[in-house]
Amino acid sequence: MLQFAATQRAPRNHALGPVNLAGVVDAALEGTAAMAAAAGFTVERSIEPGLPPATADFSGLVQSLQNLIVNAVKYGGENRWLRVAAVAVKGKGQVREITLSVEDKGIGISKDEIQQIFQPFYRSPAIAESGIHGTGLGLPLARKIVEAMGGRLTAESEVGKGSLFTIHLQVAGAHAVAEQEHAADPRTGAEPDFSS
Image 1 (cartoon, helix red, strand yellow):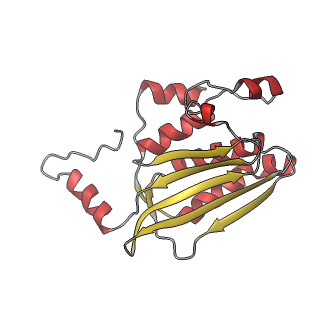
Image 2 (cartoon, one colour; image 1 turned 90 degrees about the horizontal axis):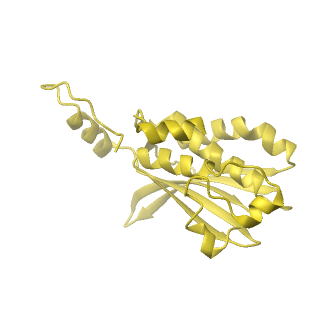
């Protein structure tokens, strides 16, 4: 709750740079391993070989991914399975974006509610009645952090079959580095602003 309140008061300045997503996945899984094990979950890790780095803030991305993993464990239902995957999305022979996803085979979300799950404090009536504890801030916080890094967080779900949450990130490379160097003008000393 305090973290979300802080993001509402002032946008967080993320230290954007090339980030190895395998390291992000490993850090997020390590931070949630005890919770997943206690809940009896099978956790699959899938990293595409040769994946290029993404433009992101390491700690911010780990936090967002952990929020999604915790969400999958809480609402994972009886199947007790989740997968964390990182892949490159290609178009016309080039990598267009990098995606980081968390998939579960849990209780799922209805079409009517999926547009509301990123609203602060929103909790489905069915979830609230089920006794599953939560604040309704994990997903809004994850989306806020991802968007501050220039990415997107999307969700797909089907009731009774599970959910897929995907973080879409820009590819790090010469173009991204050039943009950062241009933003930090040596004549003015201006530093790049990644808060918007």
